[in-house]
Image 1 (cartoon, rainbow, N blue to C red):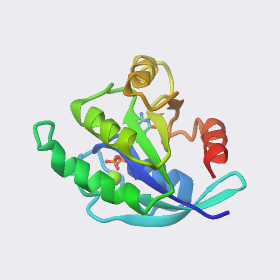
Image 2 (image 1 turned 180 degrees about the vertical axis):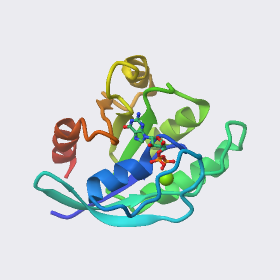
Image 3 (image 1 turned 120 degrees about the vertical axis):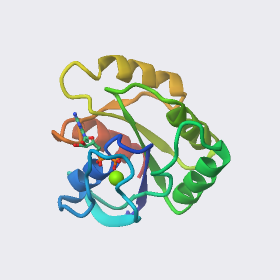
Image 4 (image 1 turned 60 degrees about the horizontal axis):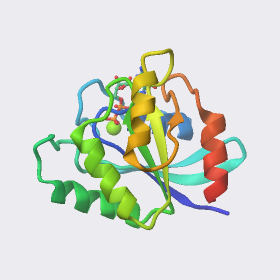
Length: 163
Ligand code: GDP
Ligand code: MG
């Protein structure tokens, strides 16, 4: 069965790196500067024998912590509206931020299943952020490293449950 996954997350959590890891091509621009992704990018993702459409969603790349929650909410709703599953990334090294909390609230209300991914979890620096992520009320976070390709097994299992 084919399905579409939307990558959701605040700027700089590693969405484009994650996209590139799953698509296997340098299609999305990875940048140390938050806000570099300007376009929606789509590609064919593969996780072991699962193949699906994946969208690296931009739209609130310039959102700041103080920004109106309604704008973030609207853009996230649009992104997940066309998707069968939301892949929600947080930065385990940075820990949760107010934008993460707003996005989580939108996703909790949405009908789309959510897979919570604690990115940047290689090594030990991500452990506190990983534990913090439980608090979002979106189930067990998957420890992941898009940069190093760690966590694919758990991601596969989570996708198999949904797809
Ligand atoms: P986006 O803004 O969410 O699309 O994030 P990017 O993919 O552009 O990545 C933002 C920064 O985080 C870049 O410096 C990446 O190299 C870095 N990054 C992405 N994934 C990982 C990871 O798994 N571990 C670490 N340590 N850094 C990462
Ligand atoms: Mg990006």
